[in-house]
Image (cartoon, rainbow, N blue to C red; front, side, top):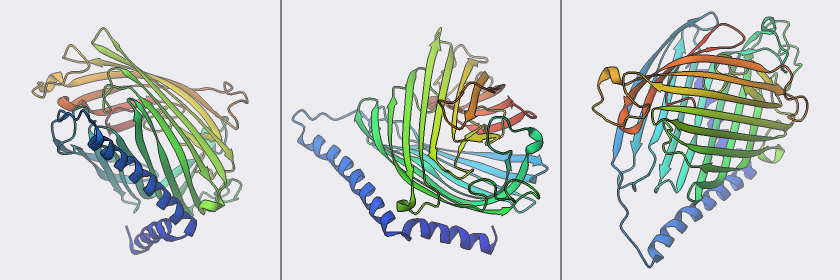
Length: 405
């Protein structure tokens, strides 16, 4: 990171926190609501007429570093590391999910940098959850155009310098049901574009970068037995975010996202999982804030953003089987090395379009692939995953901690 990049990072962070008075008011409101919910839990516990001492969960602290290495024409040699810290707060009640902080960092010989910190933190027996990420990058990205009929030869390489903050707060309403608030800010500056391309011609919204900033509401139903590696259960996550001038956003639009996940334990040995994701943007988002298909989590095998538009739907199935042990889930911390391996097969189908009600099944895209799993920490079901996905171009490889969904 050079001096100019450092100045951009600091100025973007300060601007996000201090620029508009409206932002101050919204942040203060979010803090007050969060404090109200948090203190209401404490008061309820103190006023309880039948107070019992809850069982405590085992304190847990683990750090897992993973080296990164890749070579690609747009990046040259890329080196980096993913540092993942897993923990559970001291005196956490039994049933409190494992929290994690993930920090992948990478650098290329073309002086391209990516820095990201993401987290899922569970407080007070999962009564409060803070989830999100802060990201800074100056990295080459691909743009193929907008719509489901873009071709591989349409590919443009551009470099965007981005500072992104995206966080959600959840408060437990009842067992399995959560509601909360979310904040999203993306500050993008387009630095390099391909000659004679759509971005150079400023033919799409956000060709010169800009700020997308919004506040919204979120709700969640979660009956999964484990957050890291699910054996059975159901998750539905709903988000509705408003971006407009009142929130100092250069682009005015509303984003709705629905993420539904189901898990089935088959014969107590294998697991079948399904994820269905739906997104709709109303208004005029930046091309970088549209619904993006592909990446390491959904529709693996396509570059993230290979297809993009105002709306998207996608569904994927993944079958998980153990190798060398009798069951996919084995929480024996003394599990032998060769018994820690597992394998998966996955297939996905989806599409992008202007509106979900307009021909959502035309030009559907299909992806698929296989993966290898290594159970790094059996007692908390933490897997290291290596996936190979096949989409519209050459195979894509992914190395991550935790499952894709």
